[in-house]
Length: 167
Image (cartoon, one colour):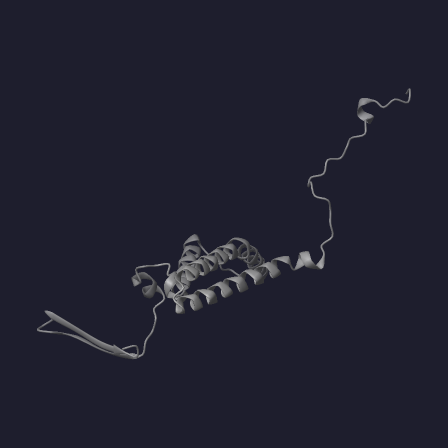
């Protein structure tokens, strides 16, 4: 050997898999998602409150802007907050090793149920459905009252009459 490095002896430069430098997590970074989620929820509730107040004062431009902000904050929650919560919940459920599996049809049913429930819970100026037949069929509103119905003339003529606490 002459003191020179051969081809097999050349030092190789290590290439990092991640371009980020390793940084220890601070207390703020551990709580970042919880803080952002709380701020999104509070901003959505504040926007909904502004929508209600603006609608009562007949300021429809402000009501529309606040309703839009409320829906945007709900969409941001669906994008940034729900997936980490779903991953965490899935890990917790998988830890118990239950013999239950949810099919694709089950997830679709849960999604439809959530959308319909949100539409029923949402205020009148932000309705997701113009037709109220499907939402009330899946998540019906209940009123206290009385109803009479029946058929006369051997089922040729049917009658229905009712009164609820809203009438």
